[in-house]
Length: 135
Length: 135
DNA sequence: CTGTAAATAGAAACAATTTCTATTTAGTAT
DNA sequence: ATACTAAATAGAAATTGTTTCTATTTACAG
Image (cartoon, rainbow over the protein chains, first blue to last red):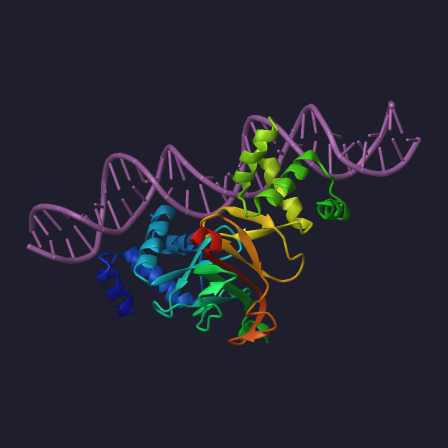
């Protein structure tokens, strides 16, 4: 918990109740959330609370490496706690409970070229059903 | 060309001038296009031509396997010709010219489980610079 | 405790996509 | 050829997700 507040400070961001609540939320739910889902949760705690503020805070937390952005099939943005820090990794998402885990092995890493293309970036998203949702 | 018209028919779709033009467009440009880009091109040929119609047609062509949907970093949908047919594959995109090619090898294929997750689906997008854009 | 830059709410703007309704058209049956 | 019918269409309007703007409030350095 403290380490997150450190990160905020190191990046010149203030520690506000909103941000504390958002971090809490991600820590306790342990899965990824869309801005709208975060907003619904926050509205339970704060009576006055706008969706634009949620977007701004999620981007701020992304910038200081507390959250990662996860690409889903829908057009919504999704965020999750960044577990691996800055190391290159991908995500596996449970389609039942929404939990997100990091995949450290990356098939592409270290590969320089594919089909004559100089590789600039790549993105991988794996969807599955986690052990506890499957039993 | 004929094979595309076959596919339309096999899926219960009619072969309309719009669809013919859209297929032509993708064949001749050999890269991926957003609905809006398709629309701009179509407007040169057809004076009356709506963006909603483009969306509908791209989805129709997707359904019969003529086009594939490519996930880009932006929030737009992108479509490209489906070169590999129904076989599982991913795409590499040139960030300079927009060309899209298929990658047949897939690191995930055949893998059943990762971290205890039963894998349901996955998605990979590689971005690079192609040989001719690089020289 | 004061000052200031950052954070905020809420309204409004924006962008991509989808839905709706009435009209037109492709392809089948005559 | 011609008429019929389901599908395709244009254009307007609605919806959805996100961003920008302005005025007010707040965290925290001094």
